[in-house]
Amino acid sequence: MSAKLATNDLEAFWMPFSANREYKKAPRLLVRAEGTHYTTDDGRRVLDGTSGLWCVSAGHCRPKIVEAVRKQVGELDFAGTFQMGHPRAFECASQLVNVAPPGFNHVFFTNSGSESVETALKIALAYHRAKGNASKVRLIGRERGYHGVNFGGTSVGGIANNRKWFGTPVARRRPSAPHPRSRPQRLQPRRAGARRRACRRS
Amino acid sequence: MPPNPGGLGGTYAGNPVACAAAHAVLDAIEEEKLCDRANAIGKIILDRCNQIKARSNLNCVGDVRGLGAMCAIELVKDTASAEPAPQLTQALMKVANENGLILLSCGTYGNVIRFLVPLTASDQIVRDGMDIFETSLTEAVTRVA
Image (cartoon, rainbow over all chains, first blue to last red; front, side, top):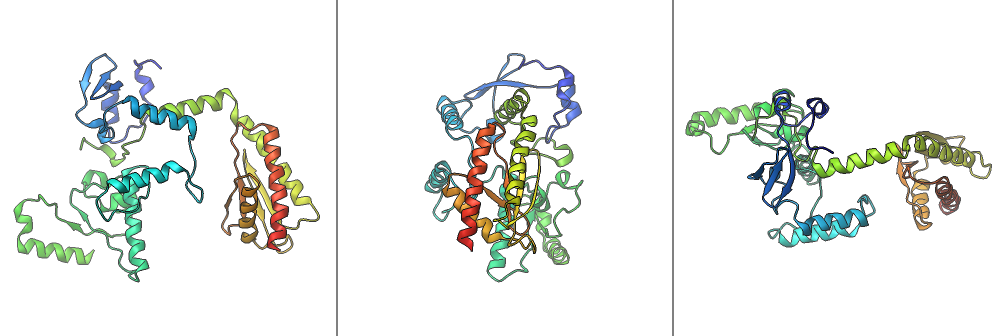
């Protein structure tokens, strides 16, 4: 595929978290990566100060990692984990548990942070139900908090722009707690009391 | 956070490795005409399921249905009552697995087997699979009875 794209070629992809029209007027394309740098479609080498949206902390296109991916895709490209299993999932979970702090003994795999949050919210609800507290269903999110983009995560999220188009997707379960760096007047007794009352009403 | 118009996101959405994989899969579907192949495979499976349903000594097949290569066969306690047979379905999955065929159950009452073999399967492979299915169903009926 050629690195240079005509404007029309950009149309089909609805880009996440992006001002699509603005972007497509003046597209910025990354076409290669190596170690700590990207190369743009016009040949500039740019330093990646974001670890590729936080996904590539060990560096881009490292031969050892590329080889591990290549080997796995050629050996066992997919196998489900419902009732059946495959060794890599168990190995990976054990490796994570080994490096995690004490008390983290199990791994539940998901495909994204949003999916992780949805699952964590469900586990919390199921936990209290199993303990006999089925009515304990209220979830607390923080002002300005980000918990992903799915229904549960949006419901406990506190970024106005991520919420305002969707109402309150999951039943009203979200009294908001103040952001830890809110201005001090937020923590004055009168305001805190008003907030507690607001939480009880919700 | 960068500006987030619309609040629709996904960090891994459209990542290069996933897109390369998807692109190659779509190419394979197009080049090998796998959509046509899906219809052909579906016909083999549905025909065979209907033959199994017509067997006079096997009174346990309810509805047989499918779209493209995804086909389903419903298992019932007997065709007259059409009462769901989830136990038979579980037994069938176990026997089939022992005989070298992975199956998946589904359905509101857990009494349906759904088929979706890779669309690259030859007619012969699909027939072999359906042979295992039929043998395993016969065996499962005996085990559950």
